[in-house]
Amino acid sequence: MILPINTYSDEVLRRKAKPLKGIDEQLEELIGNMFESMRNAEGIGLAAPQVGVSLRLLVVDISLADGYEGASPMVVINPHVLAVKGFNSMEEGCLSIPDVRGEVVRPSVIQLKYRDENFEERVGEFDDLAARVLQHEIDHLDGTLFVDRMQRRNRRKIQKELDAITRGEVKASYPVALQAGSEVK
Image (tube, rainbow, N blue to C red):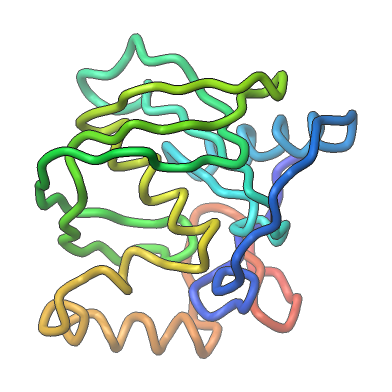
């Protein structure tokens, strides 16, 4: 089932999400719905708060991006960044902030401890696009949006678009949920 994606001003996107204690059928269904919703919106990452569920859960599939066709989809539960290396700047966008993009500096390599879709603990090192997408989605679990990480002068350049989204003026090719619980398709 395709879920509506919560937009910029929704308070669920500003909350620290709760850790998961395990997996059940309901969570398996949510994970499937998140993958379906992310792909429907042509995204490469989606965190549970973006679909209105304040849990430390995210899905990533960068196989749609050029050069990453062989990448496997990932389910990431209760992630914790153990170490970082290097930094780089890259333009980011977000399904919760349609049609807005901006430069963000992030670590270029991360070591991540997390649980997978079977709730098995994993530790992995990720670089390039995988590291960036994982960090972007983990930020969602902590109530942070990519625009919060932009330099102030660059953030001012997109403030009109952010204000429009806050007013409910959202155009997206996928279903979005507005703050009052209304939905735009």
